[in-house]
Image (tube, rainbow, N blue to C red; front, side, top):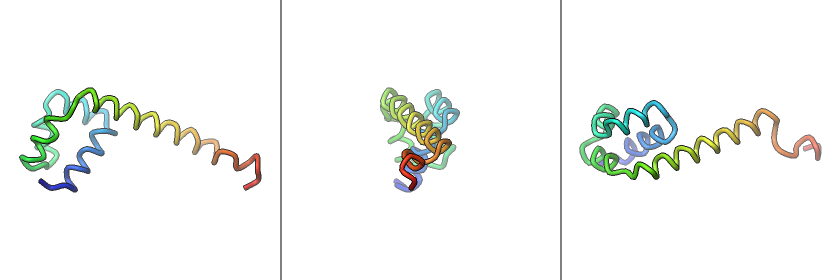
Length: 82
């Protein structure tokens, strides 16, 4: 199993809504189309669907939170002058 390819695929799976929807419809096809070897395909096909949804939601919340902080500057920087 190519660990780097698997990690890259999982990162995309957790953060890309369209990829995740396609994966949930056809996990093996999407994994193969993404370049995973057969061991990787089997590994991701067995992924816990509820856990995937929960993790993806958590990452989305974190990204939104970071984006909101970025729009207003670092927290506390204006108040304390640094």
